[in-house]
Image (cartoon, rainbow, N blue to C red; front, side):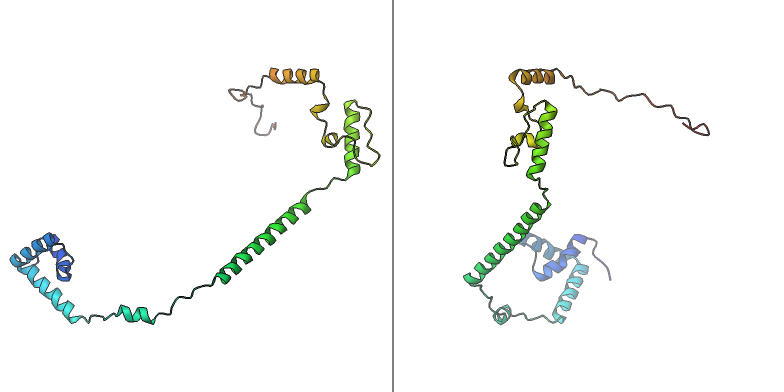
Length: 187
């Protein structure tokens, strides 16, 4: 049995048999089959195989009719899911806030008054007494000495000093290395 030397037409034979070629390709393939005995025999063999194979009968309409109808959710069910999601969101969010608040350190008023008094005394303010209720006289000083207690001249001097700072990074790293002796001599 001889084979066709044109693989393009041999590969097109199944598509020709099943009617999957466009008009121009089908006309070229049919003309080749008329002239080539090997392709004519192979097309006949493919046709006999197709005829011998049982064709499945698929009834799409019967299958679609046998499927159960899709259930539709009522609006009430949808609202229940939304409410459940809102409750879960509030519970999880609330527990996160409670956890955060429990981990936040608390400062009592006597500790704040002590810090304020110490800061004022260290800064040269002798009137560092807390109010009669035990609360610090100046809440800002309870956290630390602020710039609001400086005079305008002191602030201008501080600003001038900050502007005069020459903070330029080094272009090259320091090349000095420590003397290290390896061996019995140690360092």
